[in-house]
Length: 176
Image 1 (cartoon, rainbow, N blue to C red):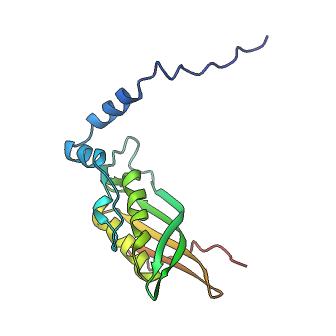
Image 2: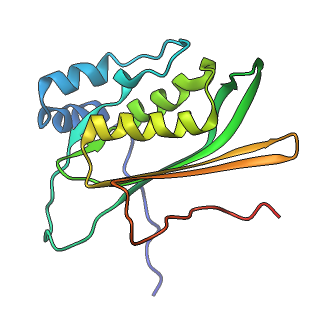
């Protein structure tokens, strides 16, 4: 006996606006206003105000070790020694939330806000780490960035907060 074909729900019947509005009702109105009015303007400095902290609710046992990871291969900033040259990088952010997590649209806009920022690679990674710590106060966060090769040299940067003296964090992928 054959099983009936799966018929997905009619998208016209599902009210996505209603679902979004119901989800937004559980958040602080100030967070909802910030989310709805979020926009990106290209400036010569990173825009920390684009990062938004969302309440992180634990529904399972607190004994579970949780981490959240965000990764992008489309990060760009400018070389501070030659601002006509963009620097391309991948960025890997891993954190253990405490009371807050990062809202993804704000994180995306924040990372894109570096597009016209002239900054050395090490300072970029440090700024991203510091801004995340200031925004969500996680238990732990690591930022790993791999910048594209320039002049035959690639740069890989890993930062961890708080610094773990017992373990060396290494995200690096082999370039060879």
